[in-house]
Image 1 (tube, helix red, strand yellow):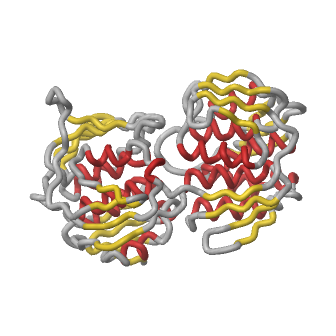
Image 2 (cartoon, helix red, strand yellow):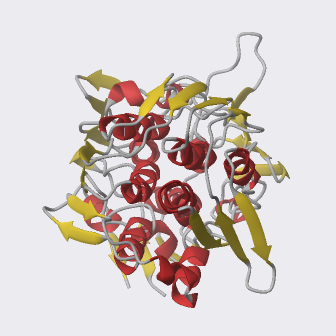
Image 3 (cartoon, one colour):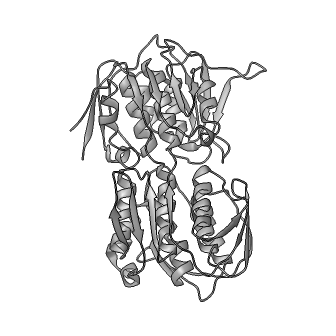
Length: 434
């Protein structure tokens, strides 16, 4: 198990470019199974979750070639369906959350799929009902083998239908869309997720020959087609990395420029940080974060305490609430952080309290942060990363703290952030991997 040793209190300076979006690339890599023709994907991040999915596609018989530093080609003309029955396939699926999105493409193209309960972050229950109920209504049959923890999904024929999703699940919507593009007739999906990741998937599928309308809205209409072809697709910059770098600059009192962020796809993220008092300047498609000794949390217009909560797009992504919470510990003022979607994502705050942060954990979903205004720096500490986003939040806390910190289980951070210590050390951080 690897760890980071961080010497806190270092100012950062320079430029950094975000990697390709993890949440998008996991979707589009599953979509390569929808065609026997070549699909080329650009801006693929070199992170653990993505590399594991690429290896899983190789094991399934997909021809994978690395064409450049972050460009891959995929050709799924000879998928080994027998491998889907193997313990090796099921074991990989159980450790990779994104593997659940293999179900839609496999079912749509081959009429059958098999998957174990997917793994991923330990952030509370993440149900699959939206995925499975939508796919069932398109004509699939599910059987669950409780002894092996395996779902077997089959369909003789998929037919379009009207779907009203019980929640606007991003991966659930993606799975249903990938199932519906090859179904007969028209599928309408209401309460669909409309995050940029999902928009990118739909645009890619349309380039391959799908007929999807309503992209960027919560009402998608899909006219099924007989087959899809190849395409070339470029992944967006990772908005979670962009937000992480904004928070990092503020916490360490640093001046940095975040390059090529695709501003139009960041949504409410910059304004959420501005509510904490952080200055952000847009310079073309870059964001400049000036050095700030202090940043003050806004209040609502009636004077009540600021509340920052996650919500489906175009609301604030839940993946950034851990970062925002950490950044608030050194702001001037107080804020209520409301994590609505996952019941275990705030449990890392006890480590921040050990470092000197003033946080009241009200319940599994809410925490009140009383900012120190940099009057009382955090103390170095030893902690373990429970999930990707808590891991990067802990790293930000350690970078701003006085003294030496150690973060164990950094494989969780590696799942979502590419060469993070090398990139931050190039800006002036002092992070050592051991």
